[in-house]
Amino acid sequence: MGTHNMSTTKFYKVWRAMYDRCENTNNPRYHRYGGRNIIVCEEWFKFEIFMGDMYEDYKNHISNNNSTQIDRINNNGIYSKNNCRWVTAKINANNRGMAYKQRYFSATSRNGETFISASQVEFAKKYNLVQSSISRCLNGKFKKHKGWTFKFL
Image (cartoon, rainbow, N blue to C red):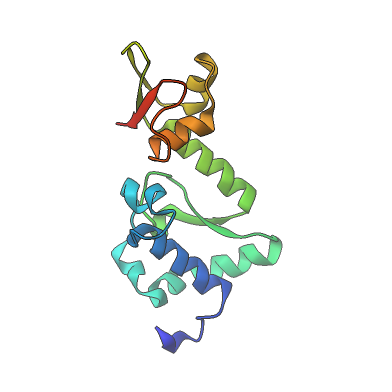
């Protein structure tokens, strides 16, 4: 990978971070990417191919924006030329939120009733729960929240 002279650039670091969160089970964000079967297309395993596909658009985007991040157009899709674009950090954060809201999960109450939902935000409002605590349950950080258990479907 040393022939491209890009190892110290932000562009290379974006590629490395993308690859790592999808492929490295020890990455702290793996559960949001590789753990959800979000993968990097095989062609992009080689940095030079990623660079050929994305570098010009990256340079154009970064020249007009303070923050430039890679974004998957379909949040449940893979990292590939047809599914990626450059966006600001704010747009990327909004897209991330939508991905979590749209993933179906089951919720089981203290008395054993089970509900299915695609929106953590809506479910939290309806049952007077905290969305971030629901997310922590779904990601294995909490076992329960106010007596409820949660799991992704």
